[in-house]
Image (cartoon, rainbow, N blue to C red; front, side, top):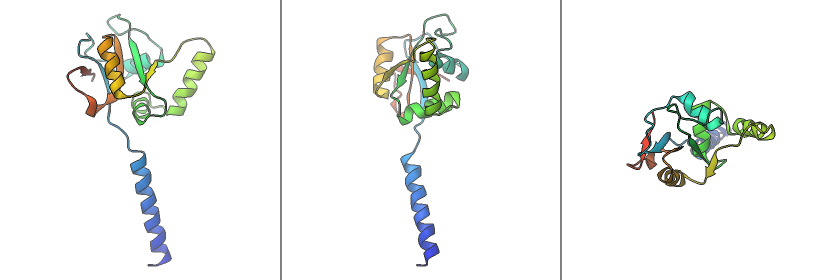
Length: 141
Protein backbone atom coordinates (compact mmCIF):
# COMPACT_ATOMS: atom_id res chain seq x y z
CA UNK A 1 0.00 0.00 0.00
CA UNK A 2 1.45 3.34 -0.99
CA UNK A 3 1.76 6.27 1.37
CA UNK A 4 -1.02 8.17 -0.45
CA UNK A 5 -3.38 5.18 -0.20
CA UNK A 6 -2.71 4.91 3.54
CA UNK A 7 -3.38 8.64 3.98
CA UNK A 8 -6.61 8.42 1.98
CA UNK A 9 -7.75 5.33 3.92
CA UNK A 10 -6.93 7.02 7.23
CA UNK A 11 -8.82 10.17 6.24
CA UNK A 12 -11.82 8.08 5.20
CA UNK A 13 -11.79 6.23 8.53
CA UNK A 14 -11.56 9.51 10.44
CA UNK A 15 -14.46 10.96 8.48
CA UNK A 16 -16.60 7.91 9.22
CA UNK A 17 -15.85 8.09 12.94
CA UNK A 18 -16.69 11.79 13.04
CA UNK A 19 -19.98 11.26 11.22
CA UNK A 20 -21.04 8.42 13.51
CA UNK A 21 -20.02 10.36 16.60
CA UNK A 22 -22.16 13.33 15.68
CA UNK A 23 -25.25 11.57 14.37
CA UNK A 24 -28.25 13.79 14.85
CA UNK A 25 -31.49 12.64 16.37
CA UNK A 26 -34.78 13.15 14.56
CA UNK A 27 -36.40 15.59 16.97
CA UNK A 28 -40.10 16.49 17.15
CA UNK A 29 -41.95 19.11 19.18
CA UNK A 30 -44.60 17.58 21.43
CA UNK A 31 -47.37 18.44 23.88
CA UNK A 32 -49.53 16.17 25.99
CA UNK A 33 -52.18 14.25 24.07
CA UNK A 34 -54.63 16.03 26.41
CA UNK A 35 -53.40 19.50 25.42
CA UNK A 36 -55.75 21.74 23.43
CA UNK A 37 -52.76 22.81 21.29
CA UNK A 38 -52.79 21.05 17.91
CA UNK A 39 -50.32 23.09 15.85
CA UNK A 40 -47.64 25.75 16.23
CA UNK A 41 -45.38 27.37 13.68
CA UNK A 42 -41.64 27.06 13.93
CA UNK A 43 -41.41 30.72 14.98
CA UNK A 44 -44.05 30.24 17.70
CA UNK A 45 -42.05 27.32 19.13
CA UNK A 46 -38.85 29.38 18.94
CA UNK A 47 -40.58 32.26 20.76
CA UNK A 48 -41.75 29.96 23.57
CA UNK A 49 -38.31 28.39 24.09
CA UNK A 50 -36.49 31.74 23.90
CA UNK A 51 -38.78 33.40 26.42
CA UNK A 52 -40.05 35.98 23.92
CA UNK A 53 -43.56 34.80 24.77
CA UNK A 54 -45.01 32.78 27.63
CA UNK A 55 -48.40 32.11 26.08
CA UNK A 56 -49.75 29.70 23.50
CA UNK A 57 -51.71 31.39 20.68
CA UNK A 58 -54.96 30.54 22.51
CA UNK A 59 -53.81 32.66 25.48
CA UNK A 60 -52.99 29.77 27.83
CA UNK A 61 -49.70 29.82 29.72
CA UNK A 62 -47.06 27.60 28.11
CA UNK A 63 -44.48 25.68 30.13
CA UNK A 64 -41.49 24.86 27.88
CA UNK A 65 -39.41 21.86 28.96
CA UNK A 66 -35.80 21.82 27.76
CA UNK A 67 -33.38 18.91 27.63
CA UNK A 68 -29.92 18.80 29.19
CA UNK A 69 -27.26 21.16 27.91
CA UNK A 70 -24.91 19.23 25.65
CA UNK A 71 -27.41 16.54 24.60
CA UNK A 72 -27.64 15.71 20.91
CA UNK A 73 -31.43 16.06 21.10
CA UNK A 74 -31.17 19.61 22.47
CA UNK A 75 -28.54 20.64 19.93
CA UNK A 76 -30.65 19.30 17.06
CA UNK A 77 -33.81 21.00 18.39
CA UNK A 78 -32.23 24.46 18.61
CA UNK A 79 -30.53 24.10 15.25
CA UNK A 80 -33.82 23.05 13.66
CA UNK A 81 -36.05 25.63 15.39
CA UNK A 82 -33.82 28.69 15.67
CA UNK A 83 -30.86 27.99 13.40
CA UNK A 84 -28.56 28.65 16.38
CA UNK A 85 -25.81 26.48 17.82
CA UNK A 86 -25.67 25.30 21.42
CA UNK A 87 -23.04 27.95 22.17
CA UNK A 88 -25.25 30.70 20.71
CA UNK A 89 -28.23 29.55 22.80
CA UNK A 90 -26.08 29.50 25.94
CA UNK A 91 -24.80 33.01 25.20
CA UNK A 92 -28.35 34.23 24.56
CA UNK A 93 -29.60 32.93 27.92
CA UNK A 94 -26.55 34.29 29.75
CA UNK A 95 -27.40 37.75 28.45
CA UNK A 96 -31.12 37.43 29.28
CA UNK A 97 -30.38 36.20 32.82
CA UNK A 98 -27.72 38.87 33.41
CA UNK A 99 -30.06 41.67 32.37
CA UNK A 100 -32.89 40.25 34.50
CA UNK A 101 -35.22 39.84 31.54
CA UNK A 102 -36.00 36.17 32.06
CA UNK A 103 -35.03 32.64 32.92
CA UNK A 104 -34.48 29.70 30.59
CA UNK A 105 -36.98 26.83 30.44
CA UNK A 106 -36.81 24.13 33.08
CA UNK A 107 -34.37 21.40 32.08
CA UNK A 108 -34.80 17.64 32.32
CA UNK A 109 -32.34 14.86 31.62
CA UNK A 110 -34.01 12.93 28.79
CA UNK A 111 -36.88 12.53 26.36
CA UNK A 112 -38.50 10.09 28.79
CA UNK A 113 -38.44 12.82 31.45
CA UNK A 114 -39.97 15.30 28.98
CA UNK A 115 -42.84 12.88 28.38
CA UNK A 116 -43.32 12.48 32.13
CA UNK A 117 -43.56 16.28 32.56
CA UNK A 118 -46.06 16.52 29.69
CA UNK A 119 -48.27 13.93 31.40
CA UNK A 120 -48.10 15.89 34.66
CA UNK A 121 -48.89 19.25 33.05
CA UNK A 122 -51.03 19.65 29.89
CA UNK A 123 -49.64 23.22 29.54
CA UNK A 124 -46.12 21.86 29.00
CA UNK A 125 -44.39 21.73 25.63
CA UNK A 126 -41.16 19.92 24.87
CA UNK A 127 -39.20 18.03 22.28
CA UNK A 128 -38.17 14.40 22.05
CA UNK A 129 -36.62 11.95 19.61
CA UNK A 130 -39.27 10.82 17.14
CA UNK A 131 -38.72 7.18 18.16
CA UNK A 132 -40.09 8.10 21.64
CA UNK A 133 -43.49 9.22 20.27
CA UNK A 134 -46.48 7.25 21.56
CA UNK A 135 -50.15 7.85 22.36
CA UNK A 136 -49.32 9.99 25.42
CA UNK A 137 -48.01 12.87 23.28
CA UNK A 138 -49.11 14.89 20.27
CA UNK A 139 -46.50 15.84 17.69
CA UNK A 140 -46.92 19.43 16.58
CA UNK A 141 -46.52 20.13 12.88
